[in-house]
Length: 384
Ligand SMILES: Nc1ncnc2c1ncn2[C@@H]1O[C@H](COP(=O)(O)OP(=O)(O)OP(=O)(O)O)[C@@H](O)[C@H]1O
Image (cartoon, rainbow, N blue to C red; front, side, top):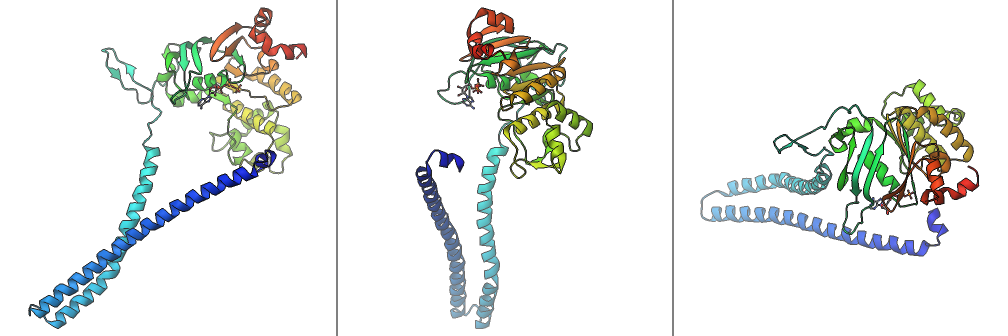
């Protein structure tokens, strides 16, 4: 509503709404006509049956094959049969409706499971891996080799092109680049939401495709731009996978995300309902709850996409300090615009139109005075 008012587009949106209503009306008329055909058809069959039986029994009486009494008995039986037959016709009608609904439900159920592809067998035949590899190799580093990706759909250009990248285990890798350069896409690929169209992603010696999805995601924690707040209590929004959240871990996670004070100021504390049907929260509070979710999970791999962009400078500094010890010995990949988030990374990758154009540490890249320098120049001048 606010967006409509702000852009003064009440009239065009009203006409759009009216067009939708007109389309809905046409669909309802069509549906009504179909119901009439179904009911009319049923009625016709039922009455045709009544008339034919009456005619045949009358003929039988005329030819002396049955008595009038027998004909009346037949009439009575037909009368008794009418109600069940009408019910049966209604049942057929409901079955047809149910079948159409089932067909639509099946479109979802029929979608293919997120199963790993075939693992090449020794004799060249594929060996089916229904659940994928269920352990991580010794080397937990991630290597992307000549990897390209394009979103499905005709005419879509590759979003990531020939990416060669090693993400070392237990280190922090930062990805920077202008908006639309492919940072989010790269993080989502590392979380196995998309698979490369060319090249490969490996974890140690295993291809990421072959690693069991559940296992891989149990090792990953993320704060993404589109991370979701469920319509549930704060506790269940932080401890999403635990039916009974562990209070000690919950408090620790809330402390790291600097949201404990806010939660404790609420009358219902961790039990306060938030989300669509609960108390409204600010963007910064939302982001801190999602950070607390990643901390609570305590994963081995952490993917942060602009995880602190909605926070004020004070909150960001506190959280970054808290996260520093949390990140220790974890493999962290952050996509960010803020210098404060990326400057301490062990390696910084600069993406431009889906290609890596620079890589190095903050010192190396600022000395190079290339794209990275241009991206962070204003922040450097402000002395962040
Ligand atoms: N679901 C999608 N379908 C088709 N194209 C997409 C989809 N998501 C992103 N893109 C396209 O992929 C490109 C890279 O998008 P991406 O979100 O990875 O960029 P980004 O560097 O993270 O941007 P930002 O800094 O603004 O978040 C963009 O050109 C975008 O239009």
